[in-house]
Image 1 (tube, rainbow, N blue to C red):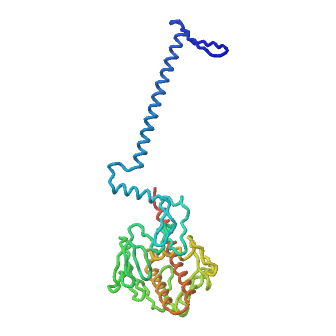
Image 2 (image 1 turned 90 degrees about the horizontal axis):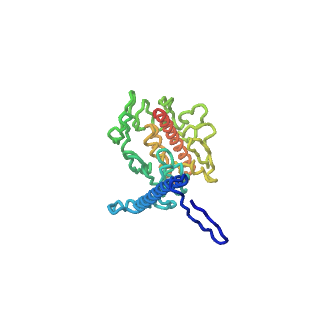
Image 3 (image 1 turned 120 degrees about the vertical axis):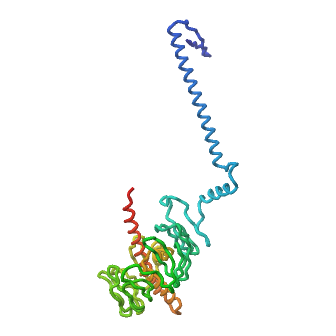
Length: 360
């Protein structure tokens, strides 16, 4: 028991012992036991906390520096990985700049300069900018280079004008077969090889005729100089000349001379004056340009591939003429973009249907 007395200056505490067998002494002893137990428990907790801090500090130190057992190559790789995760510089001439992230939704949209090629992945998302138009390939595809189609990615590289790209829908195997050896074999009953088109069809038209289709099947041939195949209701002919068939678009969407045909990611059309800058970047031909060859050559039907080939050949022929062909070039690019978006959107719908079949 403690009793305190206070004078004018100090507090003096005197300890007065209780009798050994008194109730007060028993209570005091019991209280001392509780205090002692609490002290021991508190000491253990402090020791554990200190030990945990030492372990955490040791782990952090080991993570920050390669261990003595780490090989020089592994240490260099670790250093390279750490450097690669640093903020990337802006696009430079002669280099490809990529976003290093596993979650693109957390990154701002990548915008390439007008002088650069926008590189898109197989889902149509911007992945990088290439100053020389040389975009990276994905999955097991390799870089293919063609004077007509430029640089594109495919599982095999067939020589344009010499070989045909053959795709077996059953085995999903792609191969190249020389045109001089007959090219890709016809797989459907009633089809024959059309020498002028280089594709299999139940109907072969001359070069100065356009093949007319109904529900995907060829039905007739129409002379191009007479207007070619008629458009279905609600559509009009766009880009046609005396020796070029042109294509059909919804009424009111064919762009006039001096205008560029613009398409957004959903396929919506609009026209913008070239004198005012043309299409917004993400709706321009240049935005989709790097993805056009690989999409049409690998996903298009034989007829669509032939159509794409004819457009590029037409552009080459116009470029060799000593005249101003800018308007015709813009029109042909619009036609090429129309074909590209037709195939792209069809593949997206097909992929969406396949995903719905997946049972999680």
